[in-house]
Image 1 (cartoon, rainbow over the protein chains, first blue to last red):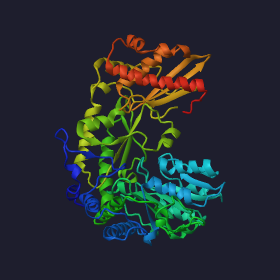
Image 2: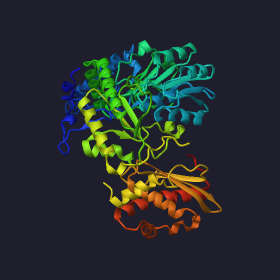
Image 3: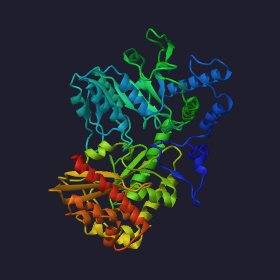
Image 4: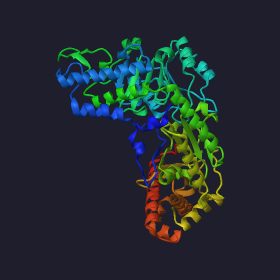
Length: 423
Length: 132
């Protein structure tokens, strides 16, 4: 994989501040976008900026918009190896995709939904909200002490015949740990339980083949894989549509309406894509997927693990820092998340940014529930490095050197190492 | 980078260590907020109030700068043992007198911490239990 060739496609990497380049390590939130994606979006806005949608305008610009949007849908279908393009619904993000499943799945009062205890808020709150609204039960399958998935706990949870859906993060945005999805889906299907995967952190970094996995629903975000902000996708295995309720309804979801009888809805995917859409964004999303298809996803994954190895061994020399999750970099993929255990290091992310233009994220990464359940001290801060294909070993070296420099500041000398957890 | 005096006081909080640092077991009321506009200083205050008196108080400060740690620690010192009705007297003049100097930066941090204290008092009057 020619990282320098890839980097040339991403214009923000050529910028400088204080004579130094950017080091973008916040890909878990959103990735940078390559030139072809920006060009595809610009083409929409400069050449055919019209309404799309099956039942709307039929003129030159509208036809071109529809063709490009459906081509984008087909690109996404191909990327995740869905059997049919109507199994790909455009959404705004993973959050909306999960909410779509939560609102349309034929739940009844007393049904049980499983998640782990380490989910992004977007795969926790929809189920808690549903529990409060219609009386389903949200039940947790706790992860192991090293944050890996516990298949025994799942086996135990699945004994309850009331379990109707299992919804898990495929790769954790907190620590990069990947669940054994294939085995989980096998176990769930043996009990007639469909599976929703939050693919926000997996689809950008590896080949996720929905047919090979047998997953029922897969939600992911194109802005985490070189696509425009605010574009996501939800894969729904075709057989589930018959049981799914409507989500947002109105324009573009209907074939025909009357004032005195129910509407005639369009089939999926259009049934679930109400109103005027972000056509430029969808066209850009298609360009993003096509860009990734020209690369070797396995090589991207291996590149990220190699950088993770380098960072992990480098961070090990600092007693002030503690990696979250399993110690093996192979088990954390593109993510290196760690606690800062010395007073004042809560500002480490700011210091990295000020000194060396290193952009990381600190906080709870929308996994507040995990921090609360583990009684993580609020005097301790978590910092996340999330890597992608355009990051380099040199960038990781600058990161480690800057961390070393900061920790050597007199301000931190002699200060105690704080406990991570409250008693 | 923070003033030397502040750094010294910040270090003393952790080398002491300060009795006000940490999570208070058995807190009857608590509050949290981003204490400083435009920054990430997230201050958590915990108090045990009995007979309308602050029997014990502690704080945690996530992603806080040394100024906020110093502010929170001194604020806890000033309110520990006071009656809830007396907290209004813990104002900037009283705080800066205890601090030993004035600065716009510390005043801004005090005002942020004061907002969290005001929220704690509101929770107390509303009977809202501590959920942490």
